[in-house]
Length: 300
Image 1 (cartoon, helix red, strand yellow):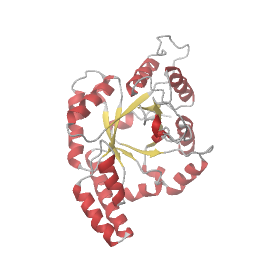
Image 2 (tube, rainbow, N blue to C red):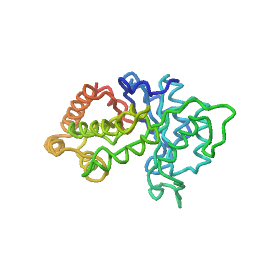
Image 3 (cartoon, rainbow, N blue to C red):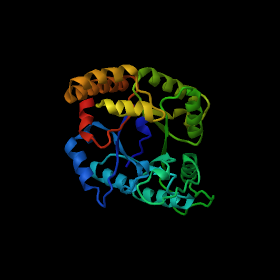
Image 4 (cartoon, helix red, strand yellow):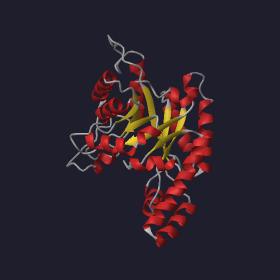
């Protein structure tokens, strides 16, 4: 299965999937197939126990998705649950399965878990995993010992907030991740074209700091369709790094007072209009739907 790196030069639309708390992925695969969402995207991602809740393994889920839909998948790996040995062991297994697009994530705090007395491992931030991937791409483990069989090239991805009162903080964090060879930076969901412009300006500024392949890194905008007022209010007020414009919330308040159907209609229209603008301005988008795959076709 090809790396998604080449897609970043032109167009890349990926769809996030969250594996279930189940010993089988079949229901999620059937839901995805029924929705036809796979027809609209270039690839997928699999989350790794988000909110520290127990879920099906992200790497094996990525393998199942690739086998089913014949499209590349970005497997998320969090630092929360693995030390350096486990990280490298999982990368080796993923490599054998053809899972070579990896999203490095520090992960949500273990205290959020639904399991009793969970302790996070967290030997380092996502930068450590990027360093490990860099070593693998040079044919050696993190301890500097060469592999007898060199792993297939791994394409590393990382994440970023899409909003901050001071955007220089976002710039510094992106720079560190690109310095560690992240090829694509996936942002938190965006809901404002002005923020899109600011993030593209940051991309351009960071690119100038490098003279090798790192100058070709790309921003991939997260996009989560909002169809409920309470979702807009929650994202705006309780999720760091996300900004939902007042005009969105005001329109959803008016629609909410009319009916649930009107609320959905207005939210979908706002989301679709922004998505279409993004496609024209910067067609590198990561769609997040909380597994509501049927909404994907409504955006196109």
